[in-house]
Structure formats: structure tokens, C-alpha cells
Image (cartoon, rainbow, N blue to C red; front, top):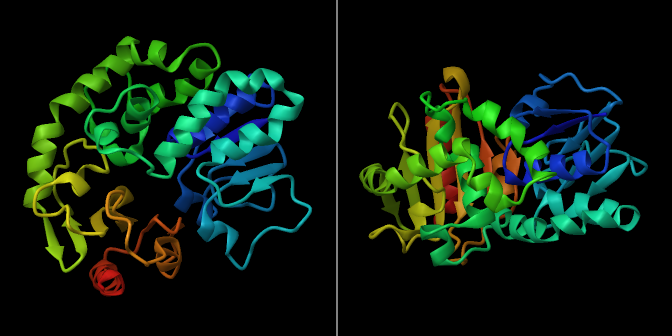
Amino acid sequence: MRVIYRGDLDGTVCAAILKYIGLCDETVQAHPKDMQDKKVNITNQDILCNLPYHPNCHMWFDHHSSEIERGDFPPDDFKGWVELAPSTAGLVYQYFLPKHPGLKRFEQIVDETDHLDSADLTLEQVLNPTGTFLLGLILDPRTGLGLSRDFSVSNFQWSSQLPELLTKHSVDEILAMPDSQERIQRYNEMQDPAAEFYKANSRLDGNVIVTDVRGKDIPPANRFLIYTLPGLEEGNISVRIADGKEGESSSIAVAHSIFSRTSEVDCGELCKQYGGGGHRGAATCQPSVKESDRVLKEIIAVCKE
């Protein structure tokens, strides 16, 4: 059986659990938009985790509100579990635990994945992450370490090893490995430059933190850093636009502040109007380069109070 998963901490823990119980012979990372655009060949030997549904799959696990509320939601008899939850890893864990009690070894990492994926973090965990939170941040594609080309192994190679490593090692053991240490060092080195970069490329438009990094060399950074910066911390929702995949599109991310949780905007529903998706509290869409300025303006208008 093949597990196709999103290459963040949530998807990676899903893949690790399925490997541990013997349901996974091969792992493949995929981007949600590639799934939506039918660019990934899916068969009845595939288990999808933390990704949009495909009718050919054997099983599907997901927790994104935008997927649950789509008009093409799968039939009632599909295999798997889809429900609003802090993480997809939590659903996979609960689904298989009754028949695989050995999965209790994943209890802590699943709980911490719940907290990270739902952005239920303290200021200290954002500014000085350790353990699972640090692993999740250096693994997260949004952190930007994948743009660095001078690591001993590529970010894709490193991240692809993690499901297997998590079946045999603790998080602290994985973080102590040389390939992880390279990334931790780079992440730590770039935090001050990243803070200056985001202050220079962001503005507060009413209650909306607007960040435009198109055409810029973006330093690796914690995606929650923006909510801690002087002059921006009063915003309760952020809208960030960056260059998209291979220059074919722009990437717009919309998210509630994790420290000022007062926005009423449903980010998932908002981004779904532009072909994207996500959760109520965080979502993305990938408009074409031609349409990106219009979409950005419209999204900011919806987010303003």
C-alpha cells in the first residue's frame, strides 16, 4: 500500500503511524493543489492523508473544513475518517489504535501535532521552540528551509526519511541527527534577519497584517513570527502573498493571529472561493499571476473589520 501525504508534520506523523502498523510500503509527498488539479495519479492502493479526496483512493484521512464542506464530498461508504479535528494525525491514530495498541508510543507526538497544526501555542513555544514543535517548524514547507540548496541532503530527501525514522526513534533523537542539526542551525541563524525582513515587507491595514514577499529572497522563518513583531502584533488576521510554484501562480495565505483570536473570517471558505482551501483559522489559495493583485485586494477587503 502507498501512503500519499502532505509533507508537513501532520502528514508525516500520519505516514509514520501507517508504516508502524504495516499498512505502508511506499510514501509519496504531494501538494494539495496538485491533488485538486488531478496531477497525482491515484489508485485503489493509495491511502491519502492530510490531502484533498480522490475517488480512486483506498482510504482517506483529513481534517480540513474546506474539504468537508466541498460539494464533491465522497460517498458515505468511503473508508477512512474525515472530521474537523486539531490534526489528521489524531484521526489516523484514533482510527487504528483499538486494533493496534502499540500505537500508544505515538500518543505524545500526536498530542503535540494537534497543538502545532491547530496553532494552539504559547509565545514561548513560538519564540523558542523545542522537541516536536521545533521538528514541525523546520519540516514545515512554509518555514522555507526547502529553498536552501547547501544542505548535505536536500530538504525533500531529509523530510522523506522522517516517517521511517519516527517508527524507530524519538523526536529528540531525530533532532540530534546531523541532517536535522544543519537545519536547526540555519533556522536559528535566520530568526533575527527574518524578523527584520518581515517588518520591512509587512504593513498593518486596519486589523489586517499584509505581507508581500513576491520577487524577494525570503529568509527561513517561523510562520507565527509575524504575530510577535512590534507594530504588527495588533493585527488579528494576516494575508501573505508570495511567488507560487514555478512562477505559474502566486500563493496567498490567510490566517488568524494565534495571539489575538478575534477575527470572524472563515479563512477556509474565503480561500475556497479562489480554488484553495484550509481551515477556518488558516487557509491558502494559488491564483494565477495575472489575477493575483485582484484576488489579494478582494481578500484583504473581506478580512478588514
